[in-house]
View 1 (tube, rainbow, N blue to C red):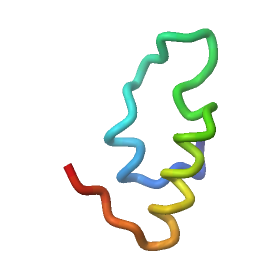
View 2 (view 1 turned 90 degrees about the vertical axis):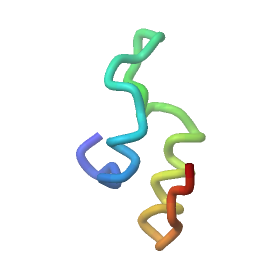
View 3 (view 1 turned 60 degrees about the horizontal axis):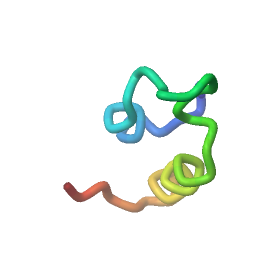
Length: 43
């Protein structure tokens, strides 16, 4: 996912447990949109 937020890229596992990319899910897309809109990632 080339348009993934850099913060998200650091948090998401490099390898998926499934056949598809880790970025191919609704939760990941929602986090990406929120981060791009200015949300902060808190751990």
